[in-house]
Length: 327
Ligand code: F1P
Image 1: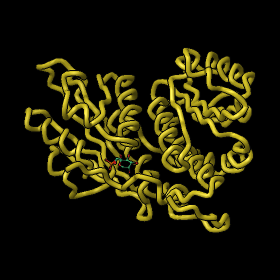
Image 2: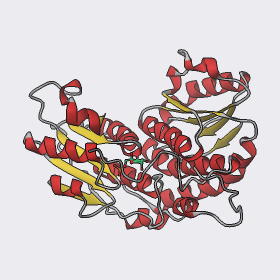
Image 3: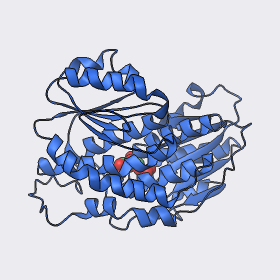
């Protein structure tokens, strides 16, 4: 892990991939709702791709398509811990690289069982695409490194597209505007904060998990992610003056999540309210799908800001590689 004194005037490749991701959103294929509501969907991926699969699965369920997200390593080894024997789901495999061993195995073994497989990837011609009946591909920012930034947003966008989401200019403007509004807030909020909690429910839960993983990868910080109402059931014991809580409000539960935000603030946490009250509150779309997508770049930037305060190069995260392949 290289300790560098980042040049605040000159953003690094990771930061460029965050700020410059929006043309890649616009260039992503526009999908139409095309999944059979009568066929359950299993969404598989690893790391960030698994967390995005969680948010896409929640969106699919609310759209009437039964879906669940399963880590690719679980689906490829223990499919019946997710669905009973004899189930005939369609498999959606999410992978930026298309080379992650568990995800390729999940697709390959699903096809061997006669299941249909759709690959959502940023890598045309990758191994995953050779084990899929359909490939949905969105190329990512060329400077994106080990940590998934633009590609995470793109895989979420592709998945939401299958649920019927259509990207608009307003979504792009909202995500970019949030990114620029959030930066000075993040830099002011981080002083003395070393415990990072991400809270989100429904379609926002996978994004909360991804925000926690991103910050952990980029800044070597201990992070937690929970459904908001779960947080009181034990994990809240860690809250004190070192806590920064990122609350991704769901439009359906804003009122009770605001109660939680007030409780966390009373215990010493600094609360960033995305879509609802906090020490700082950011207005977001009332559509949970649009909210999940448009908040993601800001969460990527938060990880970058914490890495910078710690003098860490987010482009060279400790122990990580761009692709995890198993022997
Ligand atoms: C999955 C993944 C990433 C992680 C790191 C290692 O990659 O676990 O989520 O950030 O880059 O690989 P992929 O299957 O989406 O290519």
